[in-house]
Image (cartoon, rainbow, N blue to C red):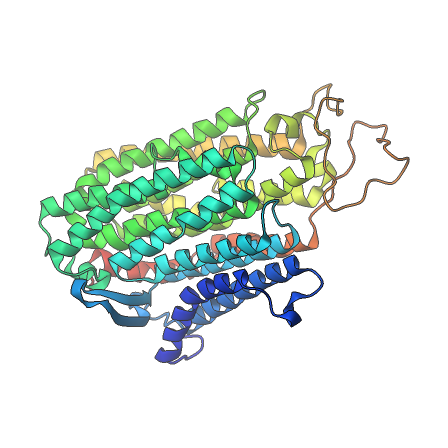
Length: 556
């Protein structure tokens, strides 16, 4: 069933447009604007260009989803297959199925919302031209990663996003941005070198880099030893990007230093490239190698779940001087641990849970980073002790709509039933209860129990954050002292009354609440979080047939 019947050639064009248009838009952003398009403010003109290009890509992706045959989500659609390097049998092979389509939509949506947000709230840094061009190159590389069906093209797209993200952190980031950017690029590049060796091993031993042909072969053309080496090499590169404990240490620094939109894109789409590689490449192409490493992957995953939660609890405690952005970054380590646990089960239930958790994490954590950025803009700090101890009535009393939305995102992140975060975690735990044949059931049930304990820890630190940031600390020192950071009124006016006067109550002046442009950027994420939580069949109906086919070796 298709919502609108669109011809195969148009679908091919749409997918090619989605991948290539941001790259062309990046080149156009760096060129001098035509006289008629410069307007009174050239900086705003190039930011408007970014909104236009990302908006066009989002519309094309939505049309692609509308024309997608939902009765056959396991079939590759909108495919393009052109010979590129005949000597190596490398092809420009594009296509989408029920696994890649949701990730394409998530990427296009988040990039558009970031471009829209940046139009009104550009982070401090060099030329807006360079900023827009880097965001568009980042979008093109991410979309290509989810659309290509050739291993070497996948690697090129996978690497394409590293340089733009490095410069977004290094040039538009906050404190310690240079160190964070270098740590990000070194970790991911070293992981990528090892991953390339694994990809070359598979291509040389099987005689092709075509991911569809390799998935259909289901590892029959590769010996077990080759599969084990390939999974180890490729898995290391993917695990760094995911990020899997203990290869995660670049992530908190990168998130803490990155500008708001950089954090949104890093958490919302870049981390998904690693887990997507596990599902698209390793599960179908090297199943025996995956079966060998699955228990270890699951063990690292549950350690990451507990470690991330404990790190968040440590940052959230009073007196720890924890940074709220850093806390959300550590929460991503735990959430992506659930994704890896689902993949390690090698069952349809677990893998579907992993894919659902991927999308839910992109929506919820993207919204959280938007909100934390807004809080930091208003208060001038993301330090939890400053936010909680010096704010009186805190967000509920000073910016009630912002406080309510932050509480909603935190509750969604802890996996409340009825919101998107619940289904992915539940399905991965179900998958761990009954893992694939050949995997130790007692071991995976132990992992399931540890993962379930991790959900309790997640609830604990998220509720502490809501209590401290949204409600404030009820202490005798609730008034602002001269040493506390002065709250920023954002774009709103100062409170009425005598200049510089503070109300003679325990409450400090109100902050500017959610602005119109913020509501436009955040509402789609909140709405989709509710929709995915109440109607999970929309997403699972796409992924399940494709996962069943993938795990069955290309057979529906």
